[in-house]
Image (cartoon, rainbow, N blue to C red):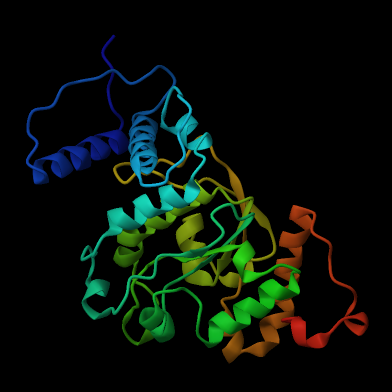
Length: 293
């Protein structure tokens, strides 16, 4: 029986063909999609398999056990730093969107590749652009305090942004900029595979959740999250699910310190989910370490 593609899959095919034509590839062959796997999922798995294969060939990479497909290969990946280096190399000296015109450095991400918690902001500021590392300015110092109040160190988490170049005058990234750069963040998430993601601010929350709502409505719950791992089709990774919590961006807290208490409540949800010990009551702890104070 003939198989017909739905509208989403037709768009994915068109995007893939255009990509190959831009590379100068015109001769293609047809391959059957495995039973029970959507076209988008098949593309996602092949892209992830290619990423893992490149990681395995990187200098110092640990050998990989054989597996049936890209997702299984990713699950057996022993060298996450190598896989992250592959993503950084794929970004290259990026000129994919207009944010590249005013940047000093691409701000990729930093932290423990095996982190249980991954923090996501919206984009680099002036200090981050100068140093090439996320959250190193005033907002970064506050984020460090928030992490410390949770009883862990900055080195214990992974930190990234939706876009990796500084928007002019620190404006919020525009939709096309997020859509262009965001897939690299999704790939970082798929490599790190955190147990929970903390979306810092409305831009990160709306991009990751694909939602358009107020912070008041987005906060206060723990979401299931599947990263999108394919550039060619809007398919979320069918083999990896994590959790996601939304809270305020540290830069917003610097402007409105009254929201620190709400942010601390959000972080305690993260700690409770992970089984981390909650700090002592306010009267029994050092007030300098708590973002609520």
